[in-house]
Length: 348
Image (tube, rainbow, N blue to C red):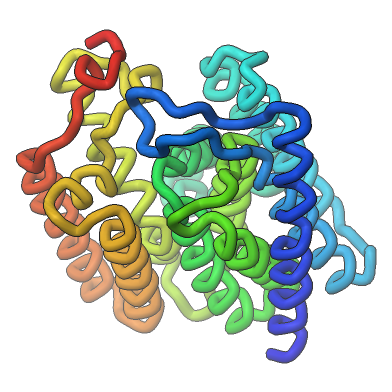
């Protein structure tokens, strides 16, 4: 417990302190997010906050693991570094957005698989085709979750807070199962996200940029692959990371089906039609919407804990209940007001 708190503290303090000079650097080099029709801020905000979180995670990991990184740990940090750099280039406007989705994210997933990190869902169920299906699932999971966090970074404090909540639950599960590397990485991510949140919660003084969002998303996806709960049936173990990350999954589902229904490409047509935008327009305001989504993330984590302590049948009933609530929620939010891409200055 003390070692976990130490890891959280190191990452938190590092991220909290480093955000100040990083913000100054972003202003000096002109790396700022300009106001636009599809954005909610009204004045230029410095980017590059992801660099402070990156340094916090790396520092806390080095200190807590005493600089002794296993092959898989190196692979995780290498993949995270790759996506952080690609995100930085995108923040600078030097890359097309499809490079991230179709090249960088799959490459990061490949780095994980080469090191032996992959999904373990189908191998025991379909011996002949299971390993191949798990490879496909790993690619889909890593790209999907990383992209989900990338598009989740659209309101002050939202992406960092959701990542911190997810990391907290991964830390808890890893502590219960004795997975040291997973616990350290999760605790470091928790601390770094919370430290950055001091400067990113509304009114934000700095944004994490796509470099930070992709960095966090990749770590969340990887922790979901690595977590191995004890005494949880194989048939339900896969539910835990899905429930812990229910918020970014739900938001991506809502936005994707809404944009497809309107004849738009989900990841190529940015607009103010996310869960947080719709909740804000319903009267919760930006802060209220973000805090409500934090609550939903906590509920997803509690559901994961309940599944980990339940029999298979009960677990599927719980998961079915979550899916039903998600479908109902998506249907209700579809009726909520939002600013369409045409209104936001984007082609429809």
